[in-house]
Length: 88
Image (cartoon, rainbow, N blue to C red; front, side):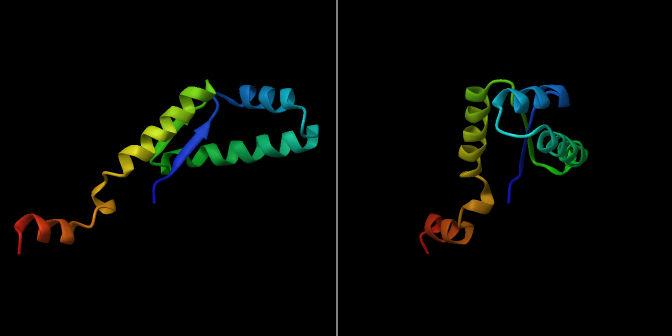
């Protein structure tokens, strides 16, 4: 399992984005901000951190992480690879 923490630069930016969307009540926004303040304390538990300043760049970064993970040795059947490589 690989974990990615995606966040904004700070809480003020998150609040601004949520308000600008206009889809949540102020009470809901305050709840989300309180949750985010709790979640940020666990950022060190994640494998990757992406600060979402620009959506296209953030999406690109997530896709790069996914691409790299395809080559992680735990994703490759090593015993089969060794067997095939040795020709036994």
